[in-house]
Amino acid sequence: MAWTDERMDDLATRMDAGFERIDTDIRELRRELRSEIRANRDELKSDIADLRTDLKGDIGDVKGEIAELRKMLMSFGIALVVGLISVIGTLVGVAASGVLG
Image 1 (cartoon, rainbow, N blue to C red):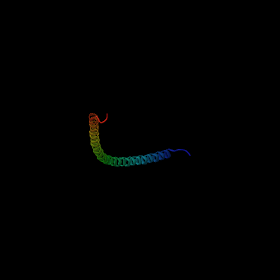
Image 2: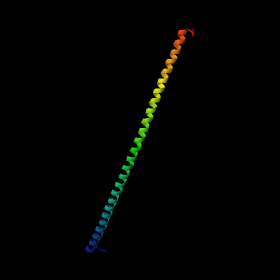
Image 3: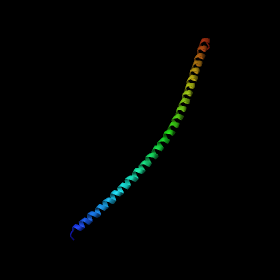
Image 4: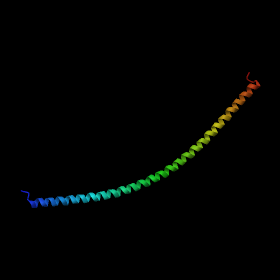
């Protein structure tokens, strides 16, 4: 079977139509993908904003707990110093009274 000019023209027309359909499909897919990407980006921004809010609250809680820990350590340090001074005073008093020796 020989390829006539008419058959070649028909083939070219069908190929052009096929490529046009493919181009249209690709354009539609690109539009859909862009729309989907925008929606995902907006959702991601919202999620990030929520996480930031939660994180700020958690950081505030941690700062409060650190402040409480500092107060407790300071109280413990003061109690330790007072206890050591009392022990030293007692030892000095005992040594001065001569009870040990």
